[in-house]
Image (cartoon, rainbow, N blue to C red; front, side, top):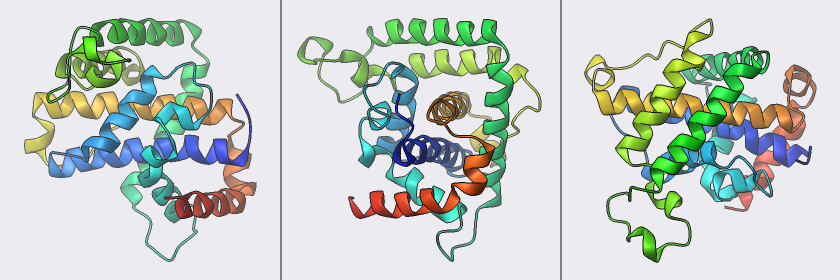
Length: 224
């Protein structure tokens, strides 16, 4: 895995995008399908050729890049404190997770189980697996797969402290499918936080590499 500014920017953008989706589901009951699929899909991309490939390409993490630019101080827009709280918590929990190899193994095993499960399902409106080069790409957002990822989050990351408390409308959060989506997305955020660390990210990068990441974010956004 390379350790370029672009890699770190994309990985941290992945964290921002996942937690933004968490907020949207918690407050609105839904989130953009394309962004949801890209963030969820990142969980399964455990051996990518590039950092961008984790999300299926740079375009699939553009919302996260926009958020990163705002929260790094690259614009005059007001930072969303709820998003900031989630990102800080995710980066902290990733450090706690790194100290627990058995839990990392449990998560890896759980992802493989969900991957195998996904091969048996096809998301609504998608062609049958026999017509797809990668059936998992079409079925990873099936409700059963999301439920498995949510359960994996509950059994692992959710046991670490401090637990992430998601704010939102109780009517949306009490819905079982929404709750599963939120937990699965928090797992996706952790996956991006792990990637951020693998790409050389850390506290010093957040402090001293801020301007470089802002410039990189601006460059990536121009490509859209």
